[in-house]
Length: 435
Length: 43
Image (cartoon, rainbow over all chains, first blue to last red; front, side, top):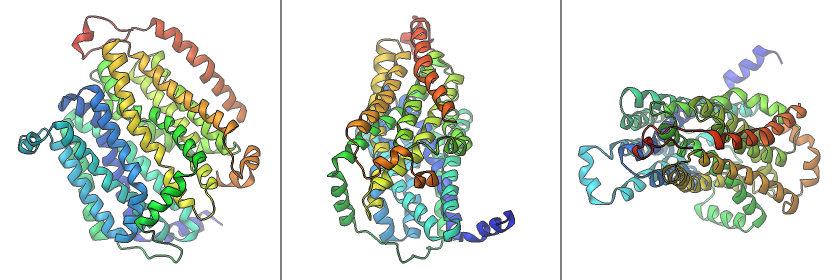
């Protein structure tokens, strides 16, 4: 097939809902990562929460969405993607607007009606409702509004746009924080998703349903949940792997506070956070090629080890430049493990339960953020504010990453038992093809 | 190409923690913001 034929296939292979949903996802991610990048310092410096509370709340914001993902999918299927998407963008608009308005004079009656921590917790829980609806709609639209021969490219476009949003969000947050105010970052995030509310209403047409798509009831989702929970080997793997994300999320939870408090108070801590996504965009393909023959479980363990050790770079030389280097190496570990992680889980699932198992793939990301919020806050307070030895924070974060890699290795030796194990050790042909 | 990964990994596992240990005992990190830290250089 010539290049022009392939280009024609791609040009004609996607229906309009595909582009509307995916471009709206870019702006949703932009808003989310902009808000996340500014959140810890906003909570600590503008709302005067201590570092422990600020980190825990940031962890809640980052983590809750991943727990609701499975239920969001069932709800989106029942509502229809157009209604679910527009409702989600409306919820997100209100959430980000409220988040940036907490300190405003007009918000005083609400603020005074309850303890600030309760109010902030409630507001931080709202975006999770919206995001958990957006994700299944966009992924579902990608499947339904693209022809079979370009569908895999459709998913690549989806992941690329997510990462562009992940890089653009912190960049814009940094610009807005520097030139306007940190509160305006949340206003910008609200505007971005509000525009998508109209874009969906005006431009998005419900994609057709293909015969194989089945709508699961919420009861069925709960039943599937119990089925997977009873698989103790799988649950143990997910709990161990949560350690990866406990360390990973520290880039959003405590790194901005650390850089601002212990390295350079004038540093643009939001813009710093775009390096993870930039690295993923730039190196995903190269790392995939380098690791394509590696068995999936080894890829997961190796990626975990690389990301875990990366944090020691901040001990070597605590500077903004070294923080960038740290984030680049963390991202290299991330792209080493992530495709193999999803591949491993999809192969582990019994026939017909892939969807349910994949829904659980997000669990470590959520646990990592919730636990990571509490853990990061403890580290910042204990090693920074009490012992005045902030470099030890990164020893602890790195320790969690390396210990996770060690536990994965032990799990692989002692516990893991799946039908692909023998084949996996040799690196199967299917695995190479899917990499 | 797998050899490249082994070399990088060896650096990460052995060299990086060794230098980090050395630096932990040497580094001084200034704290600009927190008044409690201003008078004493940490680490």
